[in-house]
Amino acid sequence: MVEVNGGKPIMATRCTMKIAAGKTARGELFFNLLIPAMALLVLTSCTTMQAYPGPKLPREQIAVIERRAHYFALIYGLTIYVGTIDGAVVDATASEIEILPGLHELTLIGQATHPLWATPLVLLMKPKFAPNELAFRAEAGRNYKLVTVEVETAAYAVWIENDAGEVVGGERREAMPRPKQGEHAGDIRPGE
Image 1: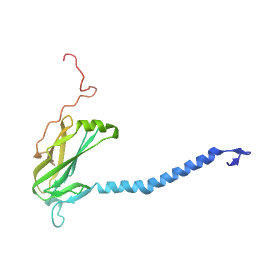
Image 2: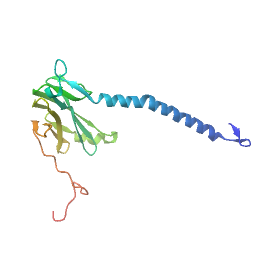
Image 3: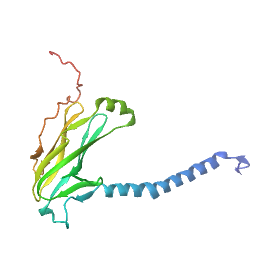
Image 4: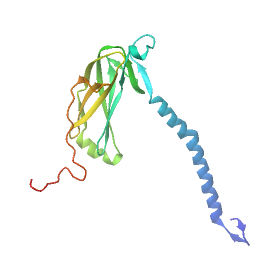
């Protein structure tokens, strides 16, 4: 114990100093490890994969497809990725894929993410999507993206749209109706 103020012990001051020292150590840990890790994540998640041989071509001579589509349900998120393009495995860190104009075949992979408490519910629901493979004809200078909607509970349709919103691969499907704000799916309305 340290004695100050007329010989009174102040144990709390020592504890406070230890806590303050701990905060400094955590702060250093945050700045030395977490910030660089977050920066690395941001930098690697914005990469572009060149899926054709030879030197990099100008944007007007190639087509670009976004690698993933996201759908957020009540208790989970579904991400659909391009796993392969024309049989070649796609770089897992790529957010975009550069391709040559022409016909291309994509194989899709899905991943559901959810909080730990929702695991039993998500396992019961078994989110799924279709089709698993899509083919489309890419045009030079165009951008393409995967689009997904929930067509039934935990069942999703996927297709490819160009930058004008036209379907170029797969089939556009209507999303299942959602309850209006303030309504619940099982509500019985007067007169029904």
